[in-house]
Amino acid sequence: MKIFIDTADTAELEAAFATGLVDGVTTNPSLIAKSGRDFKEVTKEICSMTDGPVSAEVASTDYKIMVKEGRVLADLASNVVVKLPLTVDGLKACQDLTEDGINTNVTLCFTANQAWLAAKAGATYISPFIGRLDDLGMDGMELIGDIRALYDAHGYETEILAASIRSTAHVQDAAITGADVATIPPKVFNQLFGHPLTEKGLDAFVKDWASTGQSIL
Ligand code: G3P
Image 1 (cartoon, helix red, strand yellow):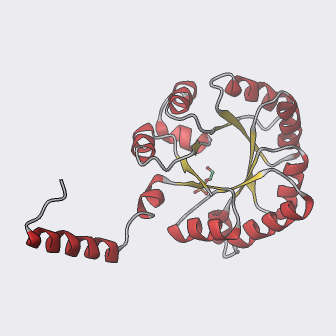
Image 2: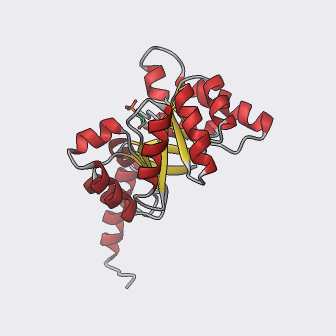
């Protein structure tokens, strides 16, 4: 499973990319607003930090304007993926931009039927929102499994990009359930590495090695 980081904060992205384990980035209008920066500037900066895909979302809800906005976003950098909402207009725009050769990420997906329509529209990625379903007491991970089964049954190549990740359990379960990508908030990404027993065990190794008085170098 590929790891994308879900933020427009370039300082957090720099730290995440330094691990060598990050494959791409997703942003959305809320994350751009949170950055407090010009969307073109911050999107271009993020695209310069990686060769991997960087999702940048349209602002309009109108089909024709979404297509225009998508072309503007795609022109910012070669690794921009245009993010579109899962609506009739969004899927119409997805088809036009796909015909242009522009990669797309259809977002705000909450049912397998929606994911099926996005695949038929040629979406490069589909973003099912796990956390927002869980927030309503529903089973967001079940949606990942349903989309995986539907796509595999019909040979759709759209990549399942697990989104709205709230915990390390979401990441692990998304990987086990067959998501192609997980887009992870920086805080959750950093939590993936640690475990108290790892820290305790390493402290013991360091202490015991020091007691030998030896050096490998
Ligand atoms: O960026 C798309 C998705 O990851 C948003 O997550 O936490 O706003 O539900 P969240």
